[in-house]
Image (cartoon, rainbow, N blue to C red; front, side):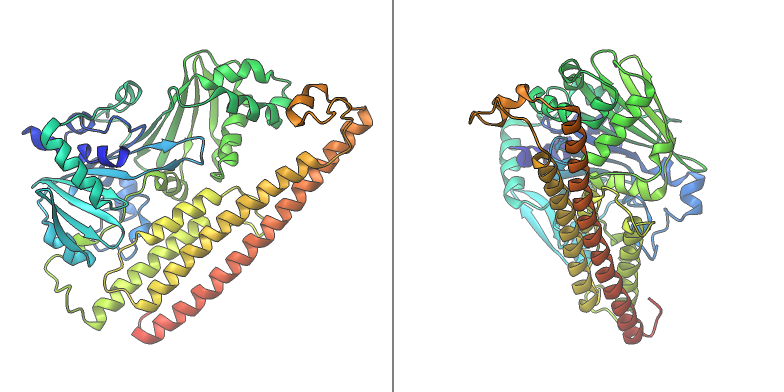
Length: 491
């Protein structure tokens, strides 16, 4: 249902004569099932001093990934919509983007520039590209993109749209938080969590939370509070530098202080394998029904956050007027350099800054593997593409292994220690749970056993992480040397 509905956002605007790059027009056509949205005022972002100083507006940037988010220089505004599951590591289904274009770009150009092909699906002009996306021609100055590509979903949408017309709209929460002020933040990301968090899952997690235990909080009273979470809004402002403000809102007053709020926020990021280095130094405060976090944002952290709603990168603007069908060796060398430097930028974000890093970063490894998969590949050296494919596979294996060792540590911790379980009597863990009885010595022994079990798992995960990076570094050195020798240019 969601994949079909996604195409409302990229096509239904043909029902009016409004300019597509007006945000208020775009928001009204977002699919009903959308619960996350990313809004980017491209013009205002690229006009900032930081963006100019760092070359975000350069069409011929040697590295597509140097920019924290794909900002097509032909567009003035971008809206990205998706459906995210906050309880499953923020996994999401297909993502759709709308781009208001300052100059028309044909589907033929997309197809040629990206090595794809044009298609007409139920009367809709499209271009499929190897980064597993469809570009969709809505109007001459309105471009749609959907990833991953799903031709059947486009066809189903087109048929239904002809019969029923536009049906999409933002949820009340997203509608209230996506108003872009002329002098406000240029980038806003919002997540609607109303009625999406089951209380039984919360209760289970809170009962196991070290933060709850540390501050002697009551899981039973905290459960309805966290279940009342309305959503979260991240505002990113780019001026001389990059700053961010995150507001997490509930429908009732926050029942703990600033310090505990900080611990919960950082704990959620760690549990979801999404740690962001440095944000522990942000300002955290409780204001009535909200937790507000604010501080400076590094380009690396900005790129990580926005990778949650990435759209495939494209290089069509740099290929206008070029013969993309019969490339010269210099063309292949230049495209290969751009591809390699993009990968280098992504790896720099992920590479641990310390040799013994226990950062919970499995989610970022997965998202960056997808970013590598989505890089432009036309006229890139085949051996370099093989390197990129193997690299993304390695990052996914590292993410899966770290996640597995964490699970193994939790399981080992739960089964360690010497419990007095007289009440179990074969009824099972949940029935005997309320009847746990520890002596003081037993409690200490159990805590030590759990700590040792988790420490063993962390050590195993750390070893796997180091091995993975050794493999990546070795392969990178080899491919750099190979490409430099082959094209006689420095990679």
